[in-house]
Amino acid sequence: MSEMELGAIQERFADIVWAHEPIGSGELVKICERELNWKKPTTYTVLRKLCEKGLLQNQDGVVTSRISREEFYAAKTESIIEDSFAGSLPAFVAAFISRKKLTQEEAQEIQNMIDTFKEEG
Image (cartoon, rainbow, N blue to C red; front, side, top):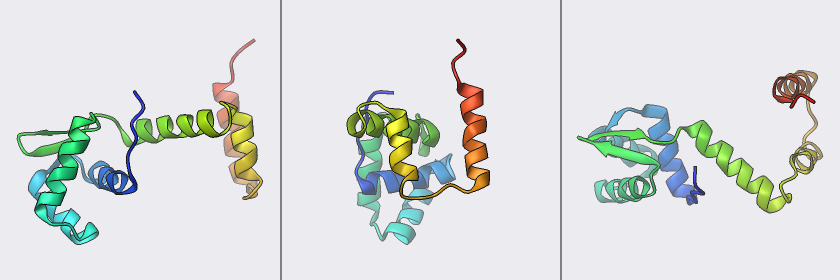
């Protein structure tokens, strides 16, 4: 995925689509009116911009994502690690856990992930 910068409002809108997709554009307008206090033109403007960026698509009035929520946030995290921690995953993890201690269950879950994804050799 190429780098895709979204503002906070665009991210919130994408989260709504991810939570409800596939969703009719009319229903999306109703949700955005209720949750974001938007008028119809605002919803369609943000939808058009995210379609232009390649994140969403609107085909025959049905809105779906072209990039999953997990793919988007994984790429965003990779970008943060690259930009803020010189690409060092250990530095990122150290910064995160220095502010929030892990429970035994969280530590074990992370260890299991490390064991699963560790390079052989």
